[in-house]
Image 1 (cartoon, helix red, strand yellow):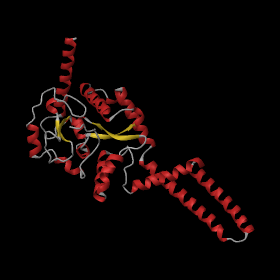
Image 2 (tube, helix red, strand yellow; image 1 turned 135 degrees about the vertical axis):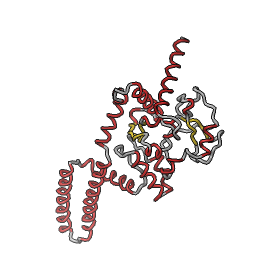
Image 3 (cartoon, helix red, strand yellow; image 1 turned 30 degrees about the vertical axis):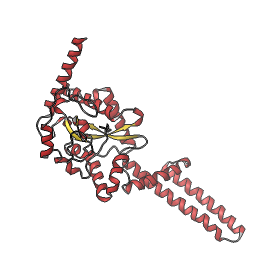
Image 4 (tube, one colour; image 1 turned 180 degrees about the vertical axis):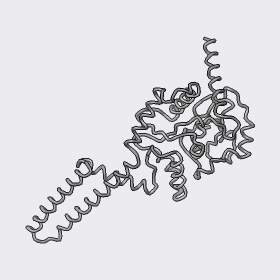
Length: 314
C-alpha cells in the first residue's frame, strides 16, 4: 500500500463529518479489529493500541476495503483529515507554522502530544511553560498581529487607490498624442509630469510608503482580488477553525471544482502554512466509548511501563 502524507482535509460539507463515524459499517469494522498495546498509527507510528481509529485513505467512507483503503490512525492523525469534526467538537485551533522552523506536521503532532501529556500530569502548570510550545505560541501571536486579514484588506484599499492614480496618469499621457502643436504638447507634458509628481508624493506621505514598494503593492492587490473571488484561501491565522471550514464549504457550494485546489494550495503561502493545535478533547472517543482522561491515563502509563522495561534490560 502506497504511503499517504498527512494533510489537512475535510468532507465538502463539514456538517457531514459530525456523524460520519457513527455508521453501523464503521462501528462493525472497528469492533472487528484485534488491537494490542503495540498496534501503531499508520502516519506517525504512535502506539495507541486499543485507542486507534480506522481511517479511509481515499476519503470515501463507504469503501471499507481493509487491505487497500483502511488503515489504523491515532486520533490526531485521523482527525487531521476531518476539519469539520475538529471544529464542531472544539478539538483543535488553527496554528501558523512558518517554513523557516523546518517542523513538519508530524513533528508538530509529536510536540502537541507531549504538551497534552505534560498538562495531564501537571494540571497546575500552564501548557506554555514548555519552551518549544512557548516559542510556537509566540510566533503565532506575532503572525496574528502583523499579518492578519484586516491588514491585508487595508493593503488592498491602498492598492486600488494606487491603481486608479496610475491608470489616470497613463491616460493623460496617452491623450498628449492628440495635441498636434509641438510646443503646446511639451508644455502640457511638463504640467502633467509635475502634477503626477505631486500626486505620487501625496500618496506616499498619506500611506507612509516608498516608491520602491509601489509595484509590490499593485501585485498585492492582484493577489487579494483573486482571494476575494474564492480562488484560494489566504493564510490568515486569526480566523477560527470553524470559520475556516465554513469558508471551505462555501467554496465547494459556489465552485466545486475549486474545493480541492483550496485544500491543497490555499492553506499555505511562501512563508508558512496553516496547521492545527489539538486540545485535550482530541483524546475523546469518536462514539463515546471512553473519555479523554481515560485514554491519556492509558497512554502515559503504557509509555512509563515501556520506559521501565527498557531500563531493566539495559
